[in-house]
Structure formats: structure tokens, C-alpha cells
Image 1 (tube, rainbow, N blue to C red):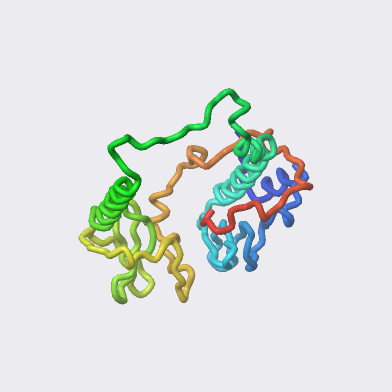
Image 2 (image 1 turned 120 degrees about the vertical axis):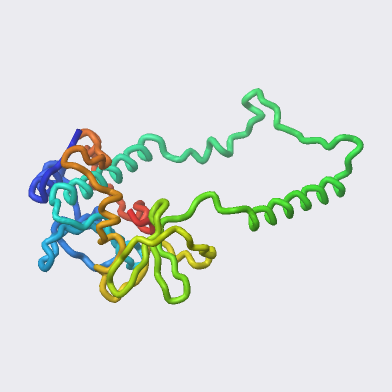
Amino acid sequence: MSRVHSIGELKQKCAEKNMPLEKMRFFIGEDRKEPRCFGVYQDPESGDWIVYKNKDNGERAVRYQGKDEARAAQEIWAKIGAETVRRKRYKSNPYDEEELTRDLSGSGRKPFAFKLPEWLDWQTAGFAVCMIATAFFIWQDIKPSSARSNGYYQVGEALFYSLDDDWYYYDSGDWSRYSDTLALEDDSYLGNYYSFEDPYDAFSYTEYYQEAYEYDGDDWQADEYDDDDYDYDYDDWDAGDTDWGSDW
């Protein structure tokens, strides 16, 4: 499996594959501010390695922040691999619009024709469908939620973060664990992004978040790809094909 253990090794790997990193929107060792880019750099004040993605709306999603250079380098290397593999798969099996519009009459299959029973008219059937649909949507509104989204929640002026089955409470720059007794409304969910005056107050910088995604040296399970997975004709790379709206 292909791994890198430092930013220097990461740059060497990219050079060996002749990757046009700026065209691909990957910036190694740079804290770029513009939308639509991935990057990794070392913060000069804290010494932390920061792996980030600037989304298409200008928001920054931090993938990793910490002292482990190897992990930071591997995060970016694995993301390059994921983007490359996705393009290779699409190139080998592009969306076949003709397949969807092909006339079935030439395949030996007859088009499906639906007929109502003789005792049921279309008006009655339509009314029944409307009643069933109405009942379904009412049930959707009153049924208990089966899963809670991870991310920020706001109740009044209080800010919380949900991570799996635990709640965390933010107060004056500090995060602390909170008992899971909150009855939050759907509209209290803010999503994975919240604008702090000090970006280092974000929950992703806390020990709780780091513990949830802790790893032990080479036992850390990042997405990995074989060396051959990184082989691609990067000259035709179109950065517009990347999903710039997601966190990673």
C-alpha cells in the first residue's frame, strides 16, 4: 500500500507522478485562502500540521490538526488517490445516456402496461394514493428521529456539539462534556460549520474530537491506495469535477 511519512516525501511522490498540483487544486505547504482548494501546512505559532479544504462557498473545513506530520501528509496523499481513482473509474465507464433512452422494442421485451382492476376506477385510485401519501408525511413529522446528526447545535445562546452519542458544551473558549439530556428541535442543528471569532475554538481542535479519531502510528486506518492507483494522465484533470461542497 502506498504511504507517505512526511511533507517532503509527499512532494517527492507528487513529482514522480508528474502531478500538476496547482491545476488539481492541491497545495502542499501552503495556507491558501481562496475557495476550491485542498492544502496542508504547518502553523508557525502552534507548530501544528493543518490539513484543510476550502469549499466552493469559501468556508474552510479542517480535516486534521495536530503534531503528527506523517498523518497530515498521508491525509492529503490519500485524498489525491481518492480523486484520481474516481476520475479513472468515470473515464473507463462513462455515463451512457444512450443506454437509458434505448427503445426496448428491439430487445425482445414488451413495454410494461399497467391496468386497473375492473372494479376500481382511476378517480378512486387517485384519492386512495393521496390519502396514503398524506398519512405517510404526517407519520414522518411525528415519528421519533432514528439518528442524530453530528455537528453544532444552538439552544438560545448556548452552543453544543453532538459527536456520536455524546454532547459537548462550549463556554468562553472551552469545551466540556455534557450529559445527553437535551431535547433539541430540528431547527437547532447548525451543521458541521460554525463561525468562531477564534477559529481554534472549533470543536475539531478539542481533545474530544482527536480521541474519537485517534490512531496509533502505522495502525491508523486512513484511505490507502496502491501506487498504480495514482497513475493518471493529469493533463486532462478538471478540478471542476471535484465535489467542492462537501467537508472532505
